[in-house]
Length: 153
Ligand SMILES: [Fe+2]
Image (tube, protein in one colour):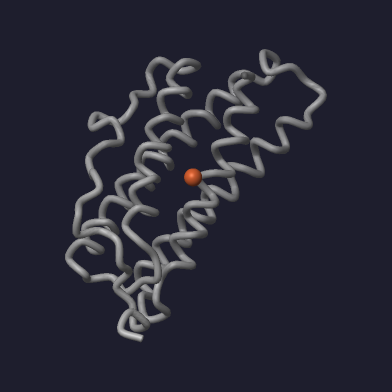
């Protein structure tokens, strides 16, 4: 798969995850929402750069230095978002974030992100996949129900 196709495909996924994270929150969770919106904005910017580059009348090798920068900036934001979703998952487990989703939704982000970083490291060997391999959080029996104001309805 050409690098730009990889970036476009997976940036859509990461952008989608950031939007879902925002949409799952109870309206009172404005701090988590604001932080999530920053990631959504970064992913939107990276995706629009990747989409623009895909339309350039140049080969990937001709624009390689700029493409390499995009690849590394993407890896950086993806890793920071991964750590952020870990933080939100911790809050979820402690029932400290009101939301309308299940833990499984948050957890699927980890394995997908790690897969993306492994693919990206084929192009840029200096990009390291995550040390925990995206498996830091395994599903537990107590996962499942969202902690929201609607939960008791
Ligand atoms: Fe996904």
